[in-house]
Image 1 (cartoon, rainbow, N blue to C red):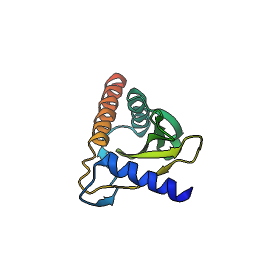
Image 2: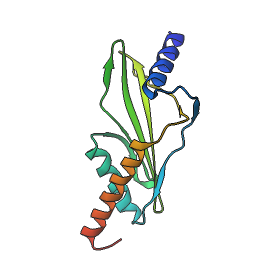
Image 3: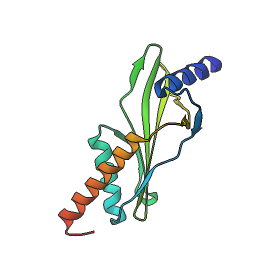
Image 4: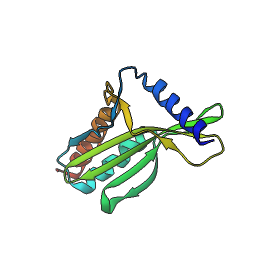
Length: 144
């Protein structure tokens, strides 16, 4: 069963990424956003929710938020995306990984590598949404 799971995961991730040039470690994108950390944390939560993500874990004291997309059935497997956010002093990092699991199982698998030509477009889009939310929150509160 373990070999089948590993092969299914490798096939899914490789085909989904369309990677024919090689794999590289995931390089977590981040953005400098000069806002109060509490407002920045709220902006992360709001942007994630607005994008349809379900927040599954948050640690305000550590600046961490985890969220997932809805699960998509794939025959005898299922897939989703896991998003992780890290808020530090005026800095937000975002990470997104596809995950797969066999139907009926709760153990999700993911690869921490990406195609070496991966552009991080969705992560950059999420960072723009977070910045927009932080700017809007700051404007409503009367400053940064």
